[in-house]
Image (cartoon, rainbow, N blue to C red; front, side, top):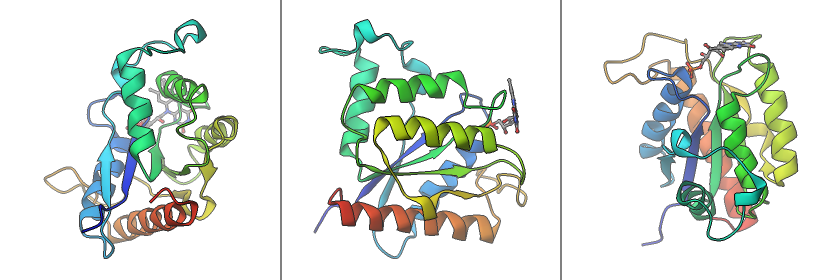
Length: 187
Ligand SMILES: Cc1cc2nc3c(=O)[nH]c(=O)nc-3n(C[C@H](O)[C@H](O)[C@H](O)COP(=O)(O)O)c2cc1C
């Protein structure tokens, strides 16, 4: 049986109870019910990444950086959900993206971001993502870059989003990323 494509989920928040995490954990649950098999894997190494230093960006890489690049390399596509801090990305997540610049793993890889903020919020983070991903050479899947507010509906007991529109939106995002990965040969 062919292996289902892996979509790597990158959260930009380190906060316990993060709304961006909630959106991505919901995406992971939605992936399990997708009509076409796909696997959504949540990256959990953000807190362990060292501060980016070009002097350390060579083999052997710091182990957390090697693990990050291997996770991106092994994924068919990447889905980001990051909050906005002071009009841009949280520094810790920008740090993660800085570590991807020196590698080739994200280059030409289908990537999208979901904005979990309420309407009218989070545009600064999205604009920064667009700029930085441009430098990494990621293949941004425009139709999959959508808003899925984390505040929609009461969270279920498992903390996931229950709003059908949010879950349908995430299913569409995952399907678009999987389709883009098939086109680029990543899946
Ligand atoms: C230091 C800090 C700065 C923030 N700056 C902004 C901002 O510029 N624009 C905005 O819309 N929200 C801003 N927020 C609100 C966060 O984006 C919002 O609380 C978000 O839900 C946090 O994501 P999380 O729940 O995944 O941790 C800021 C929050 C913090 C803690």
